[in-house]
Every structure is written in C-alpha cells, then in structure tokens.
Amino acid sequence: MSDTTAMVGGLKRILKARRINYAQVSDALGLSEATVKRMFSKNDFSLHRFEQVCELAEVSVVELAKEVDSEKNYISQLTEEQERRIVGNTQVDPETWTPA
Image (cartoon, rainbow, N blue to C red; front, side, top):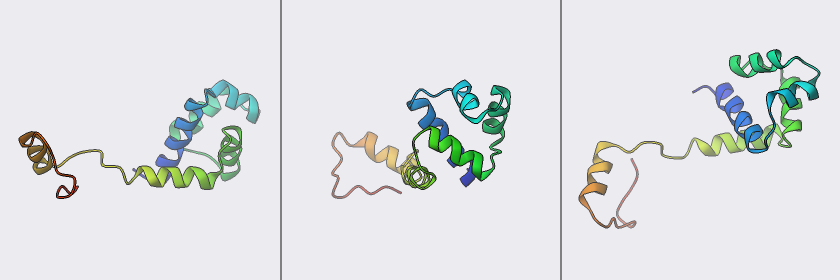
C-alpha cells in the first residue's frame, strides 16, 4: 500500500469515526459531493485540500501521519509456523513466543 493510499484511508477512518460524511466535507470545502467522492476514490488531493479535510476532522496532517505509521506495525497475519505453535499449545508462554 502506498503512503498516499494509507494517508487517505486513515483520513477516511477518522471522518467515519467522527461521523463526518462526504456531504459535510463537500459543504465545508464548497465543492460538489461528487467531486469529494472522486478525490477520495482516486486519492487525488492537493495538499491544501487535504489539510482542509484534516482540519474539518480536527486532526493535523502530522497526527494523521503518525497514526498511519503506527498502524503499519501491527501484525495482520500469522505465519504457518506461528499458527501451528498456537494451535498446538493450549497455553503460549509470552516469554518464548516471538512474532515473525
């Protein structure tokens, strides 16, 4: 996933969490809702527009970037060996188990 896609995805999640929809974004920016939807679907923002949407969502671009970066550190999938170890043990010792 590109950094741009990750940033726009993070902004979408924040907007959704704050219950801000595309109609509200379009009103705030003075754009049509179709234009706002297109910007999000194509990840096509000027930096100024992106900052405006971040401001509406009450998050700075820096805060958003930090949040998106921290999400990259989460394990989203286990290796086959990790799955075998977990399934094979009724209790996993956190001292000896290490993620791949």
